[in-house]
Length: 238
Image (cartoon, rainbow, N blue to C red):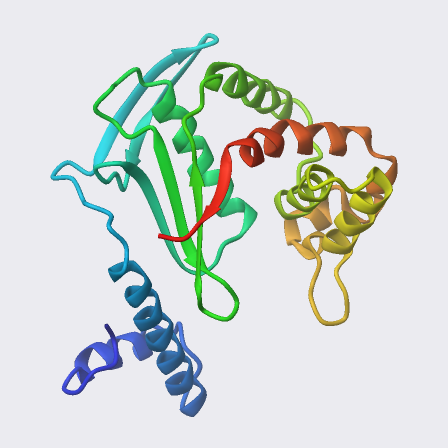
């Protein structure tokens, strides 16, 4: 909570950080943030998620000659849980999916085998994805590591939002031409919404050269990454 009576020092601190516009626009932005957080807290308070005393797990896995170490955080009794008080984007899905795979490979029965990604729709209602236990986690992670190793030598044609859109349309029964056209819309954008290609990094490579409709690498990579995610993902209400 940022805006509340008698909290002027904190408000002044936020203003002085330079992260908000000056004057009235900054006040309005702060109020909007506060309202969004209030709404999201209401959503979370309706869930039955039970925190654990130790809400993280240290990972140390030797896999395909690669040693993977790190920490998976935000564990509850039954789920790995990620929260976002905003619209969920494909990069958020990728982040929890990788953590979900690592938990599946940890061979620790005390850790949750399911995951939840809780966010908001554009109208600020709940949006929640549940990820089920992954039986073939080794195979999936091996393919991702192959992509990673390939990417160490040359850029791979993987663009999260555009790739997500393509696989989403394919898996809901649309033909390839339709899925490609929707992916191209996500990549190019419109006068009302910037495309993923506007990202400064993608301006450097591949820039304007990329033609998704003729790019077999894009299609195969998108399916390798997102198809297993959709196969284990379910939209739920909690």
